[in-house]
Image 1: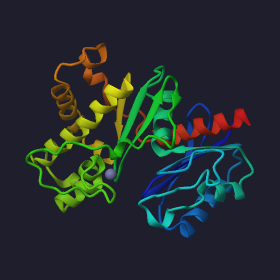
Image 2: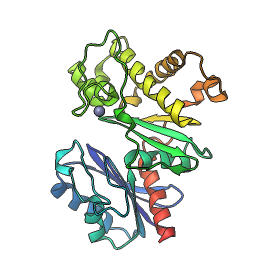
Image 3: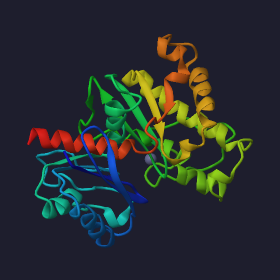
Length: 291
Ligand code: ZN
């Protein structure tokens, strides 16, 4: 089955053609500019293929309530040009096919549980640490939506005693995203974080904040695996630091097989950056078979 996948990010849109086995046949990246510029490029890309369904996974917040008049819209996004934009509606005007729609991070975790390192598990958390921070949650074998969808990037964190950065979340200041996102790292360092060595104390703070959030997810959601993705996590040296902080902050409270094998519990994505579009293939397939 020829399927379309669209992963909408704050800086780029990934358009892909693939199938229900998670195979990506063709892929193109389009910069995220204003909708008037970006949407025609996306539509043109997909018009060239005989797609039978499309999966869309978008940055948020987005409206996922099917009965809502604004279902499929991007809502109170920090990306002002996309605020209140009817993303799904604009695509449906052009393509008379079934659509699956979810958050970018739910798309990524769906990719992992269907095709990647979370295959076979029923409870997991995917956290992306990029320009922003978001989490996708898979619970008892299904994506968690609820009132809206999880927004675990904005959880409160305890400040590191040596850290004087004010926190750049426009809503909360020093929430997790305000302290540890890629944009927070850029702002606190004044240069791209990739250019900063591991001896800089910023990585100690970064691990401290991410570990606090991860402990919150472990204690409330009991995930069997936690996958960390996003541009910041390409810095692989962070993984052992985060695992060590999780162990330290957990204080020996829980003893489980997973926590005793933490190097297999808190892990990088196994799909080489394609977890999002592969999740879109699954969203598209599910939409096709249920239509
Ligand atoms: Zn926030």
